Image (cartoon, rainbow, N blue to C red; front, side):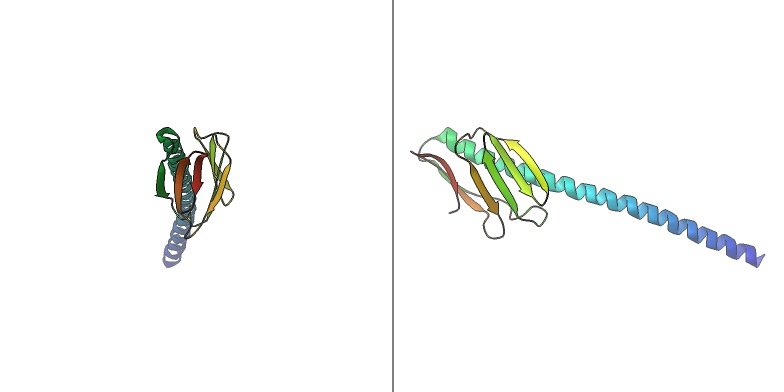
Length: 133
């Protein structure tokens, strides 16, 4: 009788450990998915903010100048912003997000990393510019 109880207890513990391992794996996958989705959402918000500021400079006309800041990183990584041909592309690690903009001026390309996250958008007689102040 004691032997059977011991075997049943070991079977119960083994099944519990197996179920815990499966649950842990599923939760880790979900957490990774959530983290990636949050990174993509942050990148979309950055693309929209940059596009909005460039479009605002276009609409307001010559003499417009505004300073704005962007997050220092996406998921702890520096990121690159490329604005060209009506698109805004945010790149970090091996991922990209592409947004649209009405800005069709010259190609703008810059990297955002720690300490270089403040920019000034200007509209003067030469056109619209995005520079670090």
